[in-house]
Length: 268
Ligand SMILES: [Fe+2]
Image 1 (cartoon, rainbow, N blue to C red):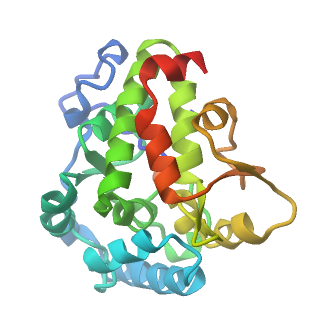
Image 2 (spheres, protein in one colour; image 1 turned 180 degrees about the vertical axis):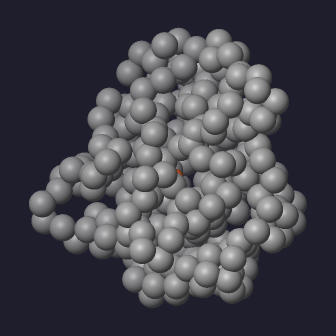
């Protein structure tokens, strides 16, 4: 369902596979040490290249709290960020922290992490030969795309709430509803800011090709955001989106999502 944007780890090293029926309760079993020391000079150089390229590409095309988060978290510091350094700034600010995972985690684990104010980041980075093609999200997508907005109190709170909605949706056999809500807000949402269309979602903010495409292409639909529309609008996980949901503001997205109860989501 969320396979391109959500981490899926192999069974924990203990060999004990978490039972799906536990709905993510074992999320800590998916956490691994980041082993920042094991990133090579080339890995750090790839981060620097991606960072410089994406910041220039985005310019002011992204909501301003994203740019504030980049500064606050000192993501412009050269090299792959280390998880502990990020957490030292992020956790006192919004209560969120990042943890390293080796790859995609199941949806129930991912939502349980969000509900616990924990964001999983890949413990690897793409190679120079794969700058624009990813089979699974790496630490550039996760750290550059997601973490800046988790320094924004209201957006961070909304993301936690989506985690809770996701756990409830999966328990009801309706996980796709929360996945769509997540997708059309946190990953691929657009939002107006002072009347201008801006990127809100991490999947767009971290994408070289889709960031401009989402804002400027005449070949896509841009529909007004509502939680009802988000929950009922399918998405593509392996191609540029054919439609984007546009909220009147970041604040509108946050307010609507925070007001949504699990029962309402399941009835939309
Ligand atoms: Fe993502």
